[in-house]
Image (cartoon, rainbow, N blue to C red; front, top):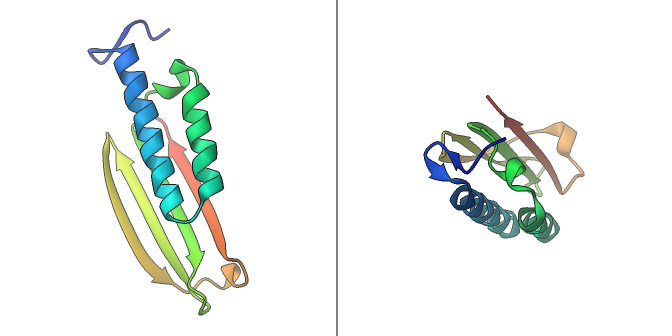
Amino acid sequence: ALGWEFDGMALPVLVAAARDRLDDEADMLAGYDDDLGAEMLRRYARVAPPAVLVAPTVESESSIVQSDGKGGAVVRQRVCKDGHCVERSGVATLPALQGNSSADVNTTKAK
């Protein structure tokens, strides 16, 4: 059990911060024209149990790959470690994605 404090912060404060963070991530998805994914993430943030929201996740990575309409792909990657996030983007030639409008890859590593 997590108790009422985790890393010196009260559990309700951490849960509220986690819900806010998920809402920010949902806004990012909506910005990439993924309204369905954004709405799913917002709903999850509202109903997820506190023990799931305040897990000791210290590192995460998400990538969004979308066709550029010219046979290539636009790759957007976000890497977070200990609460600090870096976003990168670039263009790549990925034959496996030709004909697809987008593909999403999300992974999370917990330590």
